[in-house]
Length: 141
Image (cartoon, rainbow, N blue to C red; front, top):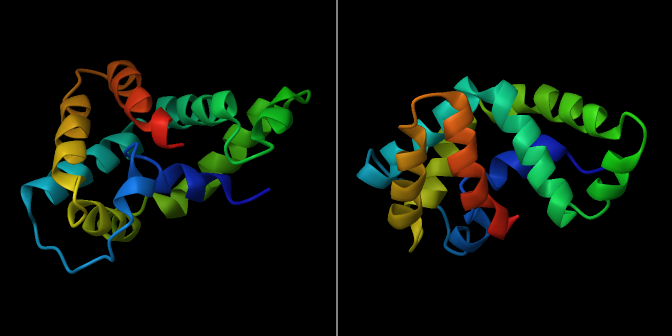
């Protein structure tokens, strides 16, 4: 199966696929990039709640294709989460976050999406954050 966490990280702000339509440009600390970085940092802080919820969202839409079948196997969901958590260690580094947020912030919809995600990042606890941010992501999975 494809690298699950890479797929998870790339879609982390809900519309990364749409936003990636423009080439990445060097983006300094714009408000959109700062909001994006804060959201990714919150995802990293809330990894134990975020990754299972994101795996569940991907399973619900079967993306990447075949993930629903994997999750339905005995122990499948747990195995997917374990795999995603391992890959997330690399995919959620400051360097990876910077590259992704540079691309997102320089896209046409970057500022709007980053602002919505930043509202989620301000949630009081991880449960509230995950409940806010995962639905933003689901349409673009």
